[in-house]
Length: 326
Image (tube, rainbow, N blue to C red):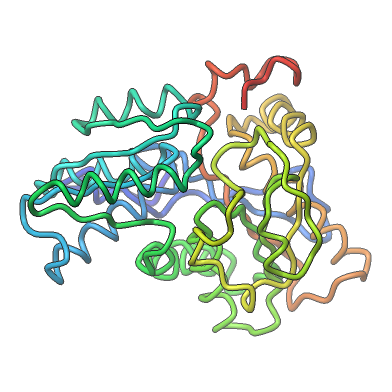
């Protein structure tokens, strides 16, 4: 269920106010609660930034009326922007590395967007370069650039953070979230720390990602299957502010894959690997708070389940680990 109990004028009015649900495997003494972002109309947390960024950019003239947004994206941001673009009279072009979810690319096209693929080996850095090149060739085109645009984090400061705190009546001991662009965690963390500077903030990434290096940790770059979070080039992740983060937790692919299946089988959560990584990290933080190993202002942990496993069925997310094409 959502809190939308009356008819609304547009699909954009259904974005946000997603359920906050207890993760049953978390300690009774320090429960973990997860925001179920698949309840958004585009079925992911990125609907929030799609609406927020485009509305703000149209308001301040950064994006001309009837203009075009060109965005490098792994998929969910493209869907979120496409949902908003279609309702706001804006054209959308997305640049997506080839390896990312076919389901997401099909949905972007269904929403009226153009999808341009770049080589997997070029990573998101290559997609970013291509997006800027495309925009330069067009009239009235702009690259919102979710990896560096402050509006990304502002969307979560304005919506996700307040929703979590309202639901838990302000009693949030720790905030744990995966970092792709880092906008989700940065926005929630800023909101949380303004309300209680002692809130423990944890960034989650796959083992092999390099966010931890921004906190001074030695991390070796390796390939990883977990999709939607992590980075191979921290220089492109301009929103991540190490000063807002107490620690970075790395979750191995194999553990995340097993948690995807456990969450479905035991708790009824049809979520993907980024949510599973967040679940494992949040449960570990909760255990440390319970055991007195970590000081937190309240005995609760909030996290985010960004999207649904349905977007990854073609990658064998519910099969065995070896056949999972992350």
